[in-house]
Image 1 (cartoon, helix red, strand yellow):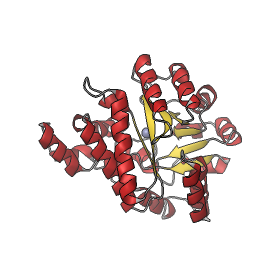
Image 2: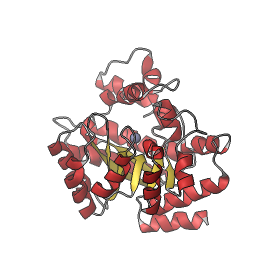
Image 3: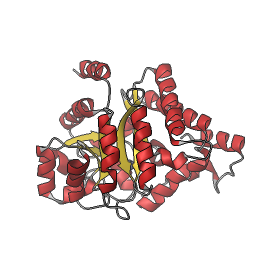
Image 4: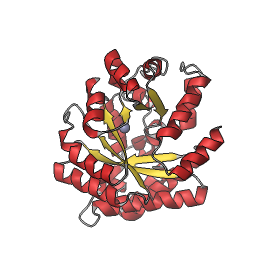
Length: 310
Ligand SMILES: [Zn+2]
């Protein structure tokens, strides 16, 4: 969310301005830890729980990504956070889906919405989220994810049924795993939930056996390198686990989780990984090919991207 948009919605809705203003509330000034990172993310929540606000934030996120030269945009969020008595989960998802569609129409940038279960949500809420995501399948919603505090809620058992619902609806499957938990959580998510993509997965690099297993089973790690530095999960781009992932032959794609909190586009991320971050241009080309192969997108979008990269 743009800081000026947060300020505008706050004025409309009577939400008090945070100390130091919206810009300082939303944006981290320097690397810290996950708690600080999440506090900056959560600073936006008071202005997000309205249908028109979600629509606008989604539309603008597409405009901002298009302006930096992105070719395809997957956006993910946890709708349960923004549910209110007058704004049920299916309406939260619908507002974001419609905002993305409007942004796509205006910019030509194809988009897909990945809906996140949240580890701190109760079982019934996560089932409701999965059912609402499934109902929007083929109509802007492209995937299911689970995100949240792995240390407090490490078990993946509760997500088996929601992932079964999403898979039956044809949604792509990914899961945040081995982000805070140990390496084995990445393999568990793949085996239990049927995912082929792992969100972050930074700790998977701690165990060569898990990495070899991931490579052998065609897993892809969704790497947000600078974000990991801001949360304290990685020391530097050069020392980031993504290099171990690539060396083991596992798939890697890149993201910027999230552009406002860390003030970076995906283009910034790629530039810095190439200039001093230890990534070669051949590796970046492989990352692009992998992104086109595993992105949750229609075949027409995939073949268009493939043709452009070739
Ligand atoms: Zn994340």
